[in-house]
Length: 108
Image (tube, rainbow, N blue to C red; front, side):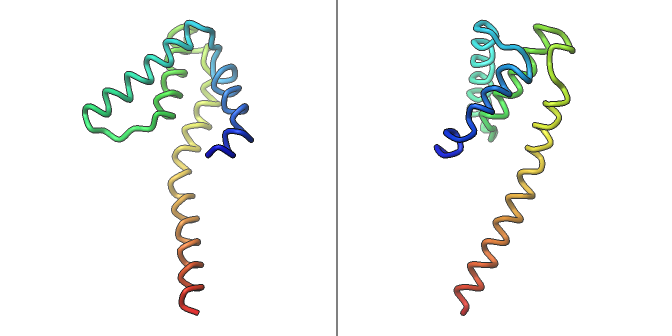
């Protein structure tokens, strides 16, 4: 995880902070508050949520609220959402391949 943050974290920060919508100090505070509140409420209710999804949702929602529909890069948000959907099957395929390789090595 640390290697990912060190090598590619700057790109995530750039995407979230300037390409998805414009974030200044006030919007940043509201994003943090909204995403934290979402995670806390979901935890109390017992729903499994991702803090990353809550963070992106807060950025998109507050950008749309503050600057209107044109204030959010919806095409970029669509790509982010698509990557979330594709992550699960891709991770499953990688895990299955690694399991098959490990079983093949063990049975030899």
